Image (cartoon, rainbow, N blue to C red):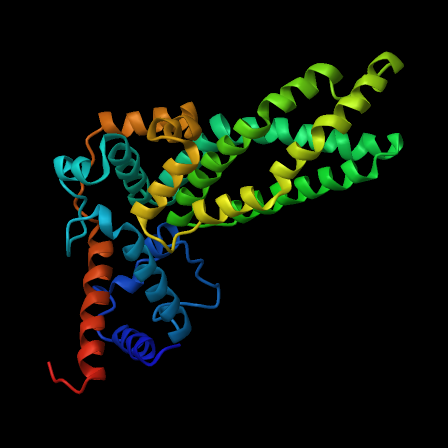
Length: 319
């Protein structure tokens, strides 16, 4: 912990004993639902200095990521005209919808990520995983160990990436699911045609294959599978997912990366799936106040005031 961070954390901790009714750190729904911090069962208000430091860190990360989307020094989205000018029409529609989802807390975040998963992510994952599992089970009996290993590695990569996204909490979960949807759309563009052709040759994955099918299928796998399996289990896909699941860059760099991967803003929308599109359309039809929750505003104001005090204090300046 840096000296300034320690000063801030200690000051926050001491402040909890002053006026807890007005203290933003006492709002557990914001801490858990938006910031994604699970408050341990052995913690109660006033919180330990360790938990206070974690809350501070996550709040600053939240503000750092979404800062470009908000009015300077305020807990409020940019004016629509200004937002479109800064980000573009499609980007503003998506990113402002993301922010509204996050402001809705755990319930809205769960609804949104569920829609993205159901209508986007799960459709692609089901097809890819079914193909890879069939190869892992079948190819050892065909004396094709190299392709078996590549298929298993691809399965492991998919499992690791999806587990990582599923472990995210709060606002990071929205970004993680959106990133996974875009990343899988990129991957499907690389291997989707091959997987559909594979499925067409095998039929139902549980079918016993005749010798007339097995022979040509073996040769086809030898000719085509190496490149496609490396697309799934290779570094390029993992690097893309590392970028799209990251929350350290800020909302504008994240969006630029998503557009680059997808090949355009409209393709980002397509990648999120029809469920997410309907969700975002619903948010547009339903007027949503951009006035911040009182607790969220207090968190921001309090953190900023403590940061200012710590900055001046570290330089021996009295304020």
